[in-house]
Image (cartoon, rainbow, N blue to C red; front, side):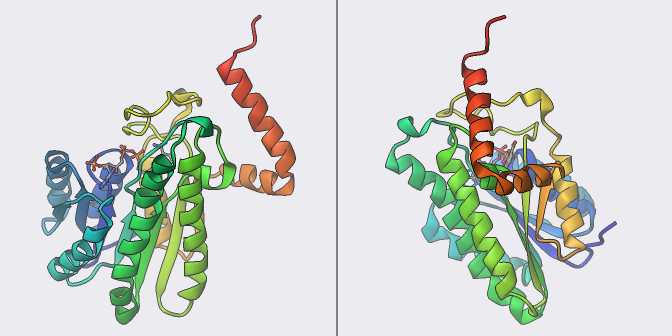
Length: 267
Ligand SMILES: NC(=O)c1ccc[n+]([C@@H]2O[C@H](COP(=O)([O-])OP(=O)(O)OC[C@H]3O[C@@H](n4cnc5c(N)ncnc54)[C@H](OP(=O)(O)O)[C@@H]3O)[C@@H](O)[C@H]2O)c1
Protein backbone atom coordinates (compact mmCIF):
# COMPACT_ATOMS: atom_id res chain seq x y z
CA UNK A 1 0.00 0.00 0.00
CA UNK A 2 1.37 3.41 -1.03
CA UNK A 3 2.43 5.72 1.82
CA UNK A 4 2.19 9.44 1.19
CA UNK A 5 3.15 10.62 4.62
CA UNK A 6 4.91 14.00 4.39
CA UNK A 7 3.65 14.49 0.82
CA UNK A 8 1.14 17.04 -0.48
CA UNK A 9 -1.52 16.34 -3.07
CA UNK A 10 -3.85 18.70 -4.92
CA UNK A 11 -7.13 17.34 -6.31
CA UNK A 12 -9.34 19.43 -8.57
CA UNK A 13 -13.06 18.75 -8.79
CA UNK A 14 -12.94 17.42 -5.23
CA UNK A 15 -16.45 18.50 -4.21
CA UNK A 16 -18.25 15.44 -5.61
CA UNK A 17 -17.96 12.13 -7.43
CA UNK A 18 -14.55 10.77 -8.33
CA UNK A 19 -12.57 13.75 -7.00
CA UNK A 20 -14.09 13.53 -3.51
CA UNK A 21 -13.25 9.82 -3.25
CA UNK A 22 -9.73 10.26 -4.67
CA UNK A 23 -9.05 13.11 -2.24
CA UNK A 24 -10.13 11.04 0.76
CA UNK A 25 -8.08 8.05 -0.45
CA UNK A 26 -4.96 10.22 -0.75
CA UNK A 27 -5.57 11.65 2.73
CA UNK A 28 -6.02 8.11 4.10
CA UNK A 29 -2.66 7.22 2.52
CA UNK A 30 -1.11 10.03 4.58
CA UNK A 31 -0.97 12.96 2.14
CA UNK A 32 -1.92 16.48 3.09
CA UNK A 33 -4.61 17.12 0.50
CA UNK A 34 -5.69 20.36 -1.15
CA UNK A 35 -9.22 20.38 -2.54
CA UNK A 36 -10.42 22.61 -5.37
CA UNK A 37 -13.90 23.13 -6.86
CA UNK A 38 -16.53 25.88 -7.01
CA UNK A 39 -19.02 24.75 -4.33
CA UNK A 40 -17.60 25.73 -0.97
CA UNK A 41 -20.20 23.87 1.13
CA UNK A 42 -19.55 20.59 -0.68
CA UNK A 43 -15.78 21.06 -0.47
CA UNK A 44 -16.10 21.67 3.23
CA UNK A 45 -17.80 18.27 3.73
CA UNK A 46 -15.01 16.50 1.85
CA UNK A 47 -12.37 18.49 3.74
CA UNK A 48 -13.79 17.34 7.07
CA UNK A 49 -13.47 13.72 5.92
CA UNK A 50 -9.90 14.29 4.69
CA UNK A 51 -8.86 16.01 7.93
CA UNK A 52 -9.83 12.93 9.94
CA UNK A 53 -6.87 11.25 8.22
CA UNK A 54 -4.70 14.24 7.48
CA UNK A 55 -5.33 17.33 9.63
CA UNK A 56 -3.21 19.66 7.46
CA UNK A 57 -5.55 19.31 4.47
CA UNK A 58 -7.03 22.51 3.03
CA UNK A 59 -9.47 23.75 0.41
CA UNK A 60 -9.66 26.47 -2.22
CA UNK A 61 -13.01 27.42 -3.76
CA UNK A 62 -12.25 28.41 -7.36
CA UNK A 63 -13.80 28.35 -10.82
CA UNK A 64 -11.20 26.55 -12.94
CA UNK A 65 -12.99 27.67 -16.08
CA UNK A 66 -11.66 31.14 -15.26
CA UNK A 67 -8.22 30.67 -16.74
CA UNK A 68 -6.87 33.95 -15.39
CA UNK A 69 -7.23 32.65 -11.84
CA UNK A 70 -5.34 29.37 -12.31
CA UNK A 71 -1.81 30.75 -11.82
CA UNK A 72 -2.80 32.54 -8.59
CA UNK A 73 -4.44 29.34 -7.32
CA UNK A 74 -1.25 27.34 -7.93
CA UNK A 75 0.82 30.00 -6.15
CA UNK A 76 -1.56 30.01 -3.16
CA UNK A 77 -1.37 26.21 -2.83
CA UNK A 78 2.43 26.20 -3.09
CA UNK A 79 2.63 28.92 -0.43
CA UNK A 80 0.37 26.97 1.94
CA UNK A 81 1.85 23.50 1.33
CA UNK A 82 5.43 24.47 0.47
CA UNK A 83 5.07 22.53 -2.83
CA UNK A 84 2.79 19.95 -4.40
CA UNK A 85 4.02 16.36 -4.87
CA UNK A 86 0.89 14.90 -6.49
CA UNK A 87 -1.47 16.82 -8.77
CA UNK A 88 -4.72 15.11 -9.75
CA UNK A 89 -6.40 17.06 -12.55
CA UNK A 90 -9.90 15.68 -12.16
CA UNK A 91 -12.33 18.62 -12.55
CA UNK A 92 -14.28 18.22 -15.74
CA UNK A 93 -17.61 18.67 -17.43
CA UNK A 94 -19.60 16.55 -19.89
CA UNK A 95 -21.28 17.79 -23.07
CA UNK A 96 -23.56 15.01 -24.23
CA UNK A 97 -24.99 16.36 -27.47
CA UNK A 98 -24.97 15.27 -31.09
CA UNK A 99 -22.51 17.31 -33.08
CA UNK A 100 -25.48 18.83 -34.96
CA UNK A 101 -26.59 20.36 -31.64
CA UNK A 102 -23.20 21.75 -30.58
CA UNK A 103 -22.34 25.43 -30.83
CA UNK A 104 -18.75 26.62 -31.19
CA UNK A 105 -19.10 28.14 -27.70
CA UNK A 106 -20.05 24.70 -26.29
CA UNK A 107 -16.90 23.13 -27.67
CA UNK A 108 -14.73 25.97 -26.36
CA UNK A 109 -16.28 25.84 -22.87
CA UNK A 110 -15.53 22.11 -22.58
CA UNK A 111 -12.01 22.51 -23.93
CA UNK A 112 -11.34 25.35 -21.47
CA UNK A 113 -12.27 23.33 -18.38
CA UNK A 114 -11.20 19.83 -19.46
CA UNK A 115 -7.97 20.69 -21.30
CA UNK A 116 -6.65 24.28 -21.08
CA UNK A 117 -7.22 24.72 -17.36
CA UNK A 118 -5.47 21.49 -16.22
CA UNK A 119 -2.60 22.25 -18.58
CA UNK A 120 -2.23 25.72 -17.02
CA UNK A 121 -2.32 24.31 -13.49
CA UNK A 122 0.21 21.64 -14.43
CA UNK A 123 2.62 24.12 -16.03
CA UNK A 124 2.33 26.35 -12.97
CA UNK A 125 3.22 23.53 -10.53
CA UNK A 126 5.78 21.76 -12.71
CA UNK A 127 8.82 24.00 -12.01
CA UNK A 128 8.51 23.31 -8.27
CA UNK A 129 8.29 19.56 -8.88
CA UNK A 130 11.34 19.62 -11.16
CA UNK A 131 13.30 21.71 -8.63
CA UNK A 132 12.48 19.17 -5.89
CA UNK A 133 13.27 16.25 -8.24
CA UNK A 134 10.01 14.40 -7.77
CA UNK A 135 6.30 14.61 -8.51
CA UNK A 136 3.33 12.89 -10.07
CA UNK A 137 1.06 14.64 -12.57
CA UNK A 138 -2.18 12.72 -12.95
CA UNK A 139 -4.93 13.46 -15.47
CA UNK A 140 -8.36 11.94 -15.12
CA UNK A 141 -9.17 11.45 -18.78
CA UNK A 142 -11.89 9.11 -20.03
CA UNK A 143 -12.18 6.12 -22.33
CA UNK A 144 -13.76 8.75 -24.59
CA UNK A 145 -10.21 10.02 -25.23
CA UNK A 146 -9.44 6.87 -27.18
CA UNK A 147 -12.83 5.46 -28.25
CA UNK A 148 -14.87 8.33 -29.75
CA UNK A 149 -18.30 7.73 -28.16
CA UNK A 150 -21.50 8.97 -29.86
CA UNK A 151 -22.96 12.39 -28.93
CA UNK A 152 -19.75 13.36 -27.10
CA UNK A 153 -17.57 14.99 -29.76
CA UNK A 154 -16.69 18.04 -27.64
CA UNK A 155 -16.01 15.98 -24.52
CA UNK A 156 -14.04 13.27 -26.34
CA UNK A 157 -11.88 15.89 -28.07
CA UNK A 158 -11.04 17.58 -24.76
CA UNK A 159 -10.00 14.26 -23.18
CA UNK A 160 -8.02 13.24 -26.28
CA UNK A 161 -6.17 16.57 -26.17
CA UNK A 162 -5.39 16.07 -22.49
CA UNK A 163 -4.14 12.54 -23.15
CA UNK A 164 -1.94 13.68 -26.05
CA UNK A 165 -0.44 16.46 -23.93
CA UNK A 166 0.25 13.99 -21.12
CA UNK A 167 1.85 11.47 -23.48
CA UNK A 168 4.36 13.96 -24.85
CA UNK A 169 4.87 15.47 -21.40
CA UNK A 170 5.88 12.16 -19.85
CA UNK A 171 8.61 11.77 -22.49
CA UNK A 172 9.87 15.33 -21.97
CA UNK A 173 10.07 14.78 -18.22
CA UNK A 174 12.30 11.72 -18.53
CA UNK A 175 15.10 11.93 -15.96
CA UNK A 176 13.51 14.72 -13.90
CA UNK A 177 11.91 12.48 -11.28
CA UNK A 178 8.49 13.83 -12.29
CA UNK A 179 6.07 11.28 -13.75
CA UNK A 180 2.87 11.79 -15.75
CA UNK A 181 -0.03 9.34 -15.68
CA UNK A 182 -3.46 9.33 -17.24
CA UNK A 183 -6.38 7.38 -15.83
CA UNK A 184 -9.08 6.59 -18.39
CA UNK A 185 -12.31 5.66 -16.59
CA UNK A 186 -15.29 4.12 -18.36
CA UNK A 187 -18.66 4.41 -16.59
CA UNK A 188 -18.33 5.43 -12.94
CA UNK A 189 -21.30 5.64 -10.57
CA UNK A 190 -21.97 8.00 -7.66
CA UNK A 191 -21.07 11.13 -9.60
CA UNK A 192 -23.03 14.08 -10.97
CA UNK A 193 -21.75 13.71 -14.54
CA UNK A 194 -24.88 11.97 -15.83
CA UNK A 195 -27.43 14.33 -14.26
CA UNK A 196 -25.97 17.76 -15.01
CA UNK A 197 -28.37 20.02 -16.94
CA UNK A 198 -27.63 20.87 -20.57
CA UNK A 199 -26.84 17.28 -21.51
CA UNK A 200 -28.73 14.50 -23.24
CA UNK A 201 -29.45 11.44 -21.10
CA UNK A 202 -26.56 8.99 -21.41
CA UNK A 203 -26.86 6.30 -24.09
CA UNK A 204 -24.89 3.81 -21.99
CA UNK A 205 -26.46 1.52 -19.43
CA UNK A 206 -25.46 3.00 -16.09
CA UNK A 207 -26.12 -0.26 -14.26
CA UNK A 208 -22.68 -1.31 -15.58
CA UNK A 209 -20.99 1.60 -13.80
CA UNK A 210 -18.16 0.98 -11.33
CA UNK A 211 -17.81 2.79 -7.98
CA UNK A 212 -15.44 5.81 -7.82
CA UNK A 213 -13.23 3.87 -5.42
CA UNK A 214 -11.97 1.94 -8.49
CA UNK A 215 -10.57 5.19 -9.88
CA UNK A 216 -9.05 6.07 -6.50
CA UNK A 217 -7.36 2.65 -6.42
CA UNK A 218 -5.96 3.27 -9.92
CA UNK A 219 -4.57 6.63 -8.75
CA UNK A 220 -2.88 4.99 -5.74
CA UNK A 221 -1.54 2.25 -8.02
CA UNK A 222 0.09 4.59 -10.56
CA UNK A 223 1.73 6.55 -7.73
CA UNK A 224 3.82 3.47 -7.03
CA UNK A 225 4.89 3.06 -10.64
CA UNK A 226 5.95 4.85 -13.79
CA UNK A 227 2.91 3.45 -15.63
CA UNK A 228 1.54 6.01 -18.07
CA UNK A 229 -2.02 4.96 -18.91
CA UNK A 230 -4.48 2.97 -16.84
CA UNK A 231 -8.04 2.14 -17.95
CA UNK A 232 -10.78 1.57 -15.35
CA UNK A 233 -11.85 -1.19 -15.82
CA UNK A 234 -8.59 -2.58 -17.20
CA UNK A 235 -10.18 -4.55 -20.04
CA UNK A 236 -10.84 -1.31 -21.96
CA UNK A 237 -7.17 -1.65 -22.90
CA UNK A 238 -8.21 -4.42 -25.30
CA UNK A 239 -11.00 -2.31 -26.76
CA UNK A 240 -8.52 0.50 -27.47
CA UNK A 241 -6.03 -1.85 -29.13
CA UNK A 242 -8.86 -3.52 -31.08
CA UNK A 243 -9.94 -0.14 -32.39
CA UNK A 244 -6.36 0.76 -33.34
CA UNK A 245 -6.13 -2.48 -35.33
CA UNK A 246 -9.25 -1.68 -37.42
CA UNK A 247 -10.73 1.76 -36.89
CA UNK A 248 -13.37 1.40 -39.66
CA UNK A 249 -14.76 -1.80 -38.13
CA UNK A 250 -14.83 -0.05 -34.76
CA UNK A 251 -16.78 2.93 -36.12
CA UNK A 252 -19.24 0.63 -37.91
CA UNK A 253 -19.83 -1.16 -34.59
CA UNK A 254 -20.37 2.10 -32.69
CA UNK A 255 -22.87 3.31 -35.34
CA UNK A 256 -24.86 0.08 -34.98
CA UNK A 257 -24.74 0.28 -31.18
CA UNK A 258 -25.96 3.91 -31.30
CA UNK A 259 -28.83 3.13 -33.71
CA UNK A 260 -29.93 0.28 -31.42
CA UNK A 261 -29.88 2.58 -28.42
CA UNK A 262 -31.87 5.33 -30.15
CA UNK A 263 -34.34 3.01 -31.88
CA UNK A 264 -34.38 -0.28 -29.97
CA UNK A 265 -35.24 -3.11 -32.42
CA UNK A 266 -38.90 -4.20 -32.12
CA UNK A 267 -39.39 -7.84 -31.16
N1 LIG B 1 -18.40 9.50 -14.06
C1 LIG B 1 -17.88 8.90 -15.11
O1 LIG B 1 -18.43 7.89 -15.60
C2 LIG B 1 -16.58 9.38 -15.71
C3 LIG B 1 -16.01 8.59 -16.73
C4 LIG B 1 -14.83 9.02 -17.32
C5 LIG B 1 -14.22 10.19 -16.89
N2 LIG B 1 -14.80 10.94 -15.91
C6 LIG B 1 -14.12 12.17 -15.51
O2 LIG B 1 -13.96 12.20 -14.11
C7 LIG B 1 -13.85 13.56 -13.68
C8 LIG B 1 -14.77 13.77 -12.48
O3 LIG B 1 -16.11 13.62 -12.91
P1 LIG B 1 -17.24 12.94 -12.01
O4 LIG B 1 -17.80 11.83 -12.78
O5 LIG B 1 -16.78 12.71 -10.64
O6 LIG B 1 -18.36 14.09 -12.10
P2 LIG B 1 -18.87 15.18 -11.05
O7 LIG B 1 -19.45 14.50 -9.86
O8 LIG B 1 -19.75 16.08 -11.86
O9 LIG B 1 -17.56 15.95 -10.62
C9 LIG B 1 -17.02 17.03 -11.35
C10 LIG B 1 -16.18 17.86 -10.40
O10 LIG B 1 -15.60 18.93 -11.16
C11 LIG B 1 -15.88 20.15 -10.50
N3 LIG B 1 -16.01 21.23 -11.45
C12 LIG B 1 -16.88 21.30 -12.50
N4 LIG B 1 -16.75 22.50 -13.11
C13 LIG B 1 -15.79 23.19 -12.43
C14 LIG B 1 -15.24 24.48 -12.55
N5 LIG B 1 -15.64 25.32 -13.52
N6 LIG B 1 -14.29 24.87 -11.68
C15 LIG B 1 -13.89 24.04 -10.68
N7 LIG B 1 -14.37 22.80 -10.51
C16 LIG B 1 -15.33 22.38 -11.37
C17 LIG B 1 -17.19 19.90 -9.76
O11 LIG B 1 -17.31 20.76 -8.64
P3 LIG B 1 -18.14 22.12 -8.54
O12 LIG B 1 -19.41 21.93 -9.31
O13 LIG B 1 -18.33 22.29 -7.07
O14 LIG B 1 -17.25 23.18 -9.13
C18 LIG B 1 -16.99 18.47 -9.29
O15 LIG B 1 -16.23 18.46 -8.09
C19 LIG B 1 -14.20 14.42 -14.89
O16 LIG B 1 -13.02 14.91 -15.48
C20 LIG B 1 -14.89 13.44 -15.83
O17 LIG B 1 -14.75 13.82 -17.17
C21 LIG B 1 -15.97 10.56 -15.31
